[in-house]
Image (cartoon, rainbow over all chains, first blue to last red; front, top):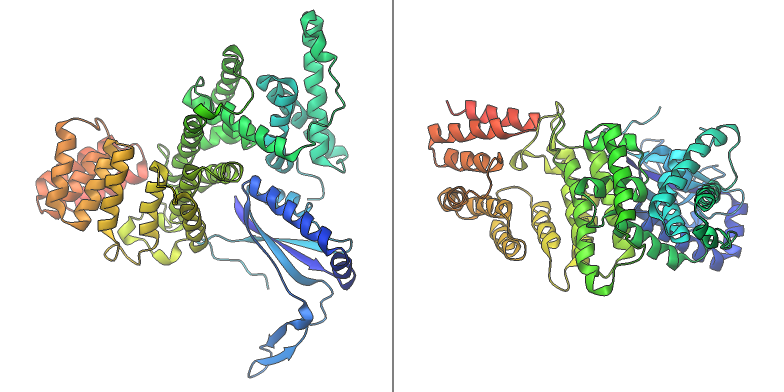
Length: 123
Length: 405
């Protein structure tokens, strides 16, 4: 068993489609969270505000450089997450398939190491 | 991993499918058999072509197998003809509230008092948690045929006793819920303090209990003890990362690196404890409150031992047991001193209330060590080591005894 983060990555198009049906999205997301809770796997969930209202702090130079706006050139921005405590990576993937998102969006599934593990960070 | 993983889908769907099928057929054993047949079929057919709706596929297939089984019986016994004629296309999954009640009824039937304690654990893990016989066998360190026999016998017992598939009547509800909680707690303790084997903590077993407790808390949100049990499990599991050294040996509370405690688990545990608290704590809630005092303390010295003594006194009143008395003695030793604690322990020995347990000589040995009565302390710790079944704990006891030379 392990915790996994189901990371929502939306494109401009999928985000626009979701915002156009925000009422429906709220309902389906609420239902999805309820399913997670009743299955005993829910740990947490948050959605992020518009990436254009965000700030990027860049450590590329001598001192951190602060710029307004969305992160880099990335097409699929991190828009929010569900944190689930599941029996396996496969189960996390099955839950990811049930996340209510608009066509074009992606869900990235990443394991959250426990307190007794040193995270492995790929180069 | 392109294909759909049968086991993963089953983990998510098992309780709902078995619950809906039991409601549909009125037969818990038949429902479980049909569901297992569907899983077996899925393992074969999904490897060739995965369905677009795996959950729906499992439910539909299991229902077909259930109907097949009923038809086979009808061929033998005409009096089942009416059941077979019942409409089979009705959507058994339609009403979400109904499904919640059915899952709850499934937990109650799996933990029914007519079953042996072993069968309750095995059935709960099988039908509610969706574990295979192999996984249950691994969790409880028994053989697969043993698990299968417990499940088969359990289903026969339920059928023979004519246990109906329904929520217990209001008058019995609280007591029956206590039965469900104790099954979950047995599973948790098997993970948190393995009764045998060479590993002290088995988080994967404790996880199943926490998951069941979370489901129960979602389905019975107004029951304080459900939140109390969940809080106890979360707060205890929060300490797992600090409880074993890299070589697998146990690390005692006073030596644990508290930075390794899982803070998010502590937060979840405290949240659950808050939900358990408003109407007075029951036995699980009180144990959770004790765990919460530890979880909130920066060190053993800075722990509010007076509060722990008071909580153990309260626990001793609502759920008297020699183990609670022994724990109270440990808390008294920390709050007041070892001499007062020894009096409590000696009273337990005089009344022979924990015969054969390694815990009593363990605590007595510790207290005598603190009182510098070394030869007696050593004899007690050696006795404790002889009585202890967990290899990891045993070696710690022997090390302590040897240090008293």
